[in-house]
Image 1 (tube, rainbow, N blue to C red):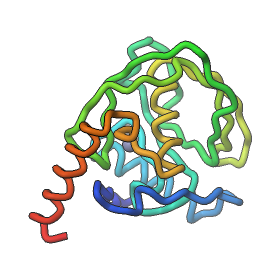
Image 2: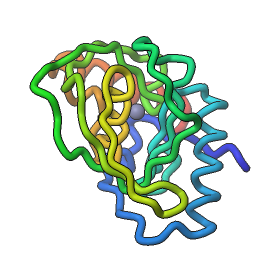
Image 3: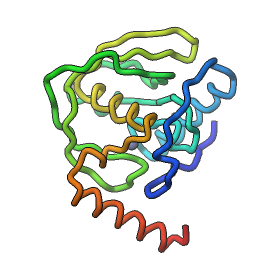
Length: 175
Ligand code: ZN
């Protein structure tokens, strides 16, 4: 396993639409292992492929320590080609953060529950109902696969402020 570099705003790769994974190859397993290690090291609870500059539809997640609903989730988890099949009309608000927008947290409203379909590392297809933090996290990460960031749900004023901050930081870092 290896820790990969996490790309941050204003990196334009974060806006790419990631490609479906056609087959779980040894390279995909290696990517999943690296993503988990990178996620734990950060530390974070979810990571999408594009955040380590791989525009592929793969997500890693571990909510074991963070699920306020007290639901037990197998850990760690890898989701390949995940898609939302349906979403509840009920909404819930969580304070979200993102490893690609470091040290920035804002409340985001999303459907409180979703059903999701994905493939695991053995190539098996699963359908699951997600609620609580699981629902929020899987929606946040699937957004990454579509080039969407949680800041996109905020007001224009807040979005402009955060873009300015990260563009300035990148300039200072000589990027
Ligand atoms: Zn994120």
